[in-house]
Image (tube, rainbow, N blue to C red; front, side, top):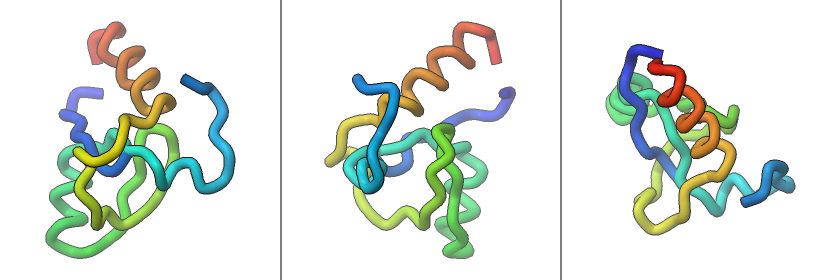
Length: 77
């Protein structure tokens, strides 16, 4: 993954329905910018799709996104 990843919206390996709403998620920066301009949804590293509309700094980071990002970073992507 050569493109940068941004923090988008908010450790267990499995989340229940609705848990994704309680976390800030990692999203491709290009997708986040596109979403801000067009209002289209984005897809987080963990697979959550949504239209960002909240301040991600108010939520803890999604553990699934965090693990995926750490794995990609360790692999040099």
